[in-house]
Image (cartoon, rainbow, N blue to C red):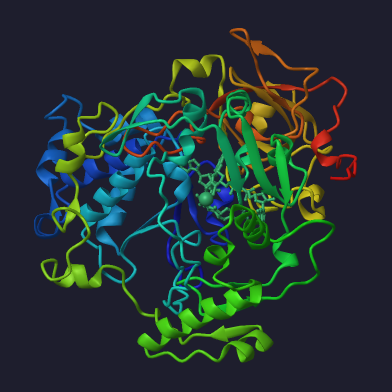
Length: 569
Ligand SMILES: Nc1nc2c(c(=O)[nH]1)N[C@H]1C(S)=C(S)[C@@H](COP(=O)(O)OP(=O)(O)OC[C@H]3O[C@@H](n4cnc5c(=O)[nH]c(N)nc54)[C@H](O)[C@@H]3O)O[C@H]1N2
Ligand SMILES: Nc1nc2c(c(=O)[nH]1)N[C@H]1C(S)=C(S)[C@@H](COP(=O)(O)OP(=O)(O)OC[C@H]3O[C@@H](n4cnc5c(=O)[nH]c(N)nc54)[C@H](O)[C@@H]3O)O[C@H]1N2
Ligand SMILES: [Mo]
């Protein structure tokens, strides 16, 4: 894009989110106000008659209902550029100019996943879709909308587009399930009702937690609450490779081999390569692969034949590769035989994705290529969602004030918006103990970006250790002062291993607040659901205050492996 001189406008609190596009214009609205910004853009389009009425009529449903909200007919509040400017702190003139630019040029809107991890995070997606529909460029090359680029969707690199098979999963006799972000709610309120995507459900009474391949003490919000909720189940079993917070909060830790200690295959739809992951070393100590652990448990429970189907690790890899070959054959693509693949380390697919224009067929003929929506069209108004009658999610994209944001009264006490984005130096919490992540730390704490004005107002110098706190918890972080972060925002990536210090814990309403001396932002974040519709996590909706840490620096004990006592059993 940079080479071809394509203009990039990056919207967000961090300047370097635009990556290599150093010619990018940077708009930094208050975090969590993107819906208001897009409503301001949409209002400008209508005011200047720039919306694509024919696309809205032929490919969308519910434009009129949304338009009446947009223009203020249904609630007496026109969502004008001036209205949006007061909420976002982006000047109204900038909003109007951007709207005209978007309507008069080929425009692609790209929305990152982070925007859904906020209070009412569904609305940002729905509003972006609506704005793209108004521009009428959906289904044109280089126009329309894309979600979660790089994270999940391809970035124009094409791809083999032949889905790799996964292990067969038998039918689970347990039908009760929860949205994953509701785990503390479930543990604290067994049997209690909750709403989710139009259904009224009840939390199961979970008496055992069995966790494999994830770290709730990394990913969950409001870790103080999770620690308390974790006391409820009778037993907690985890598969872990590291003595991290996940392992430390379990009754039984089954030492799991890392990906370097097992043979495996990797591949995705968007990739042109199937990759052989050769084991580098045998599992260390008593560690076993997840498959070996489950197979041994299945044997003790008397159904190992059914579980393994008589195959070991390499047996399964051959079998799965074979199924991949069959899928490829159906698409008239030949993959090499397993042994050739395994020796070479990879198999290459022809590029079957290049030149693909998303939704081009829908654009050309919506009747023959309907979307997977009830109407088959883009639902700017959804009868289904309106029918749920949720106060926190109407039938069309709506601006709802987030529970915490820089425009809230709470910002007087906690004046900084915390952005806890994905870390540059690791995948989530993985290998935070490794040299690469450790090299990025400031005095052994996770680095946090802070604007020079905010640092000055708090008497903080570059390289100082700060205490970040709110009414849910506190953590330490190392200050990196930079104007690449918006004023009023502090950025602390996820993933520092949770290392609570019991000596210095504060209390709030009689409850002990967690204090992570290492810099895990999830002691600060809230664990309320995004809305009754999605019940997603809302980590990006979080206000904090900071102060310079002048006390002694507590050790991040989580980095110290425990003494292992061998027992004869
Ligand atoms: N290095 C590395 N890469 C990863 C991961 C990792 O852990 N490490 N994790 C992977 C995974 S699982 C995922 S889901 C993807 C996630 O991919 P993304 O969702 O794109 O990643 P994030 O870093 O969470 O968020 C991107 C940016 O959104 C901005 N942002 C946050 N809140 C707001 C807001 O309210 N408005 C606006 N306009 N911007 C906001 C922040 O500035 C942040 O830098 O990344 C994947 N890639
Ligand atoms: N504040 C805030 N919180 C967030 C986010 C955010 O943006 N902000 N992002 C959210 C997102 S998008 C995501 S995807 C989640 C990620 O959350 P998780 O996926 O839970 O995070 P990971 O640290 O990747 O956890 C993987 C765990 O599995 C272990 N492990 C690694 N390999 C193996 C293996 O082969 N076998 C077994 N058994 N274990 C293994 C690792 O040691 C690690 O403890 O975090 C979420 N949490
Ligand atoms: Mo993710």
